[in-house]
Length: 405
Image (cartoon, rainbow, N blue to C red; front, top):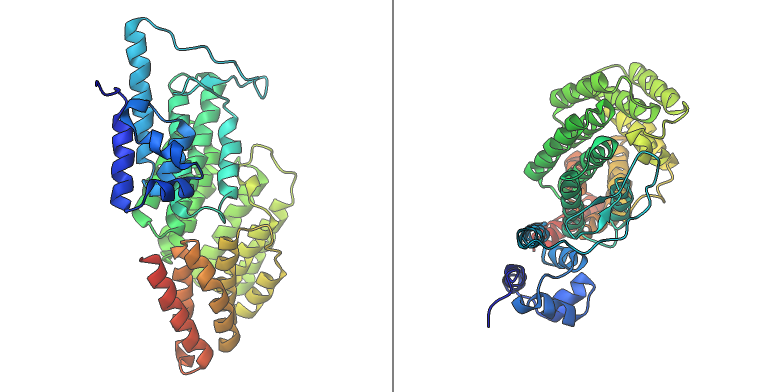
């Protein structure tokens, strides 16, 4: 019997599953579909599995977007074969435009991608942080990126600018996911892609936004001068940005100056200026609007700690309401708070606080948080004979083993 021309996807899914050493039933459980759906997806004669199913399988197998990318290529081949045969794909009902300036464009499934849709989809992906691991989040993000790229093939004018702007923000978020998972090379690659989209969109505010996120990623390894250069570039690009983004840039400048040895009073004045800018009337197009008051308060605490005021930093951390953050981010903040405590001369309290957060960070696959926990452990080295500090060492070793399984 002649194999279906799109059977390559089925073979790839089966190969990835077998390499992972799991059954169809286990893959179905990971993907959130029934075993029958997975079985059909692995049958070459069954044709092309749906975009939603392949995205879920890709995430369940940790394929990093490769299966969704293969599906996109095979679907494009289907469209080309139909075009060569003189056939026209079935018409798809047009969704209403979300404004007077945007119009839906077709993606590779023949479905309609509203130019405003990627922002809502990205928000949905970001909200799944506690339910899905980094591999699944990245797979969903890559799938969204593919849809944006496909839509760009047929978009023009204001629609195209909006899609390019969304592409920059989606790529930046993919960079953050890689950063949190400790994948530095992949993080840098996604940030470069985000900056390319921002440049193509000719949007200086988005360019500043991406540069600022690159600077924050560099902070993880405390590359002070590189971080300062990136913040300066964000300052130049963001002169016309909304108050939210300009406030963040000022805040990051304060952090850089603190790391470079500025006096704590000067750092505090910079932070006050950032807070004043943040209080201005917001611009609805400001890419920093997604960052709420809690995150702003956390950044202030980080600056205070870098300025040599760990006790003030601790009180600042404690004043922030973190309930709106994911468990992964709450664990990260808790570890930073513990380090402020350690620097304030409270080793036992710091160690106990970190012990509670490290397992949560490990379960979420957050190598970024574990990196900060190891930095805390080095700070606690003078108190290594204390039981709480020793217990933290055991917890950290267990967490590292969990991540390397």
